[in-house]
Image 1 (cartoon, rainbow, N blue to C red):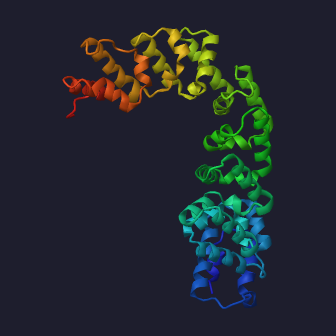
Image 2 (image 1 turned 45 degrees about the horizontal axis):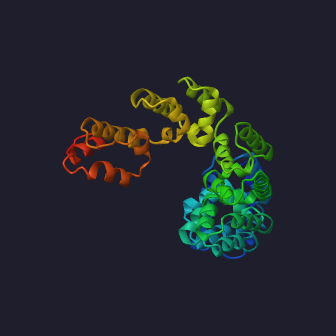
Image 3 (image 1 turned 90 degrees about the horizontal axis):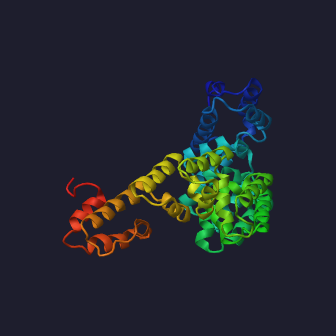
Length: 378
């Protein structure tokens, strides 16, 4: 039997304190004698509860109401024992209970086991299952039939191959209990022409988009349409992706930054329409890129307006190294006809190395040094 000293160390109110003491002082409340295993589980239970000294009031009340001889400690211990049987570590159990305290008083056979088995049937096994549940404990408190199963079915309709389905489900476990809002937002997006692989794109990269109030999504769509992305356009989803991630203030500030380099408002909007992710770049990256292309490469502004995607490349990993090679090719007259720098940027790494470094055997080392930006033996 655990000592009274352990009970008195609990950070709960006095009513709860009495409930805990009562349930343990009455030996008839235990259906079976406490053996070594159950004593360890009980110790872990109290350590788990006692580890959160700032337990929210509503959780304290919740435990106080349920900590009676009829449910405590049998049900919490059966919950802990079930989690251990599934293979959860103590740290994972602690995390799950801390986030969803009512789970301690769940009926294992009616509430927990069916949900765990449901996800096992979907393909979640071993550590994958345990990581998935410990990161998304809300799925254990949501209705299996009213929320989890319908949400999974909705995802299946969007992610139709097994790889996409598991990827989306693994990343969107927290979304499953929000079935009504989730499917309502999907329906609205589909009515705007965002369908099929476009919805899948958002689910993979910005799943929280699906649980914002629908009024906000309608506002995002209106903004995108006003900026020149019509409904039913395949570019609309990319505009929504960017708009959702930026405040109006930040969005306008980045457009103003582009215009500071002499681009008109229409030109800056045209750049955004051609490359919606352009405004997701940091202001520093935009500034460095525009300055480099206009002042160092000496590109006409019209080229950046028509091909703004070049501003999205990594300056350190792609733009600067290739520009050094571009300069060397021109200065050494290694090519009869050096292509434009923008053309060189489009090439994959392998094609670039093959066309502009490897084939110039006598100058390959110098070109590679220029490409790497340092001596080979540095």
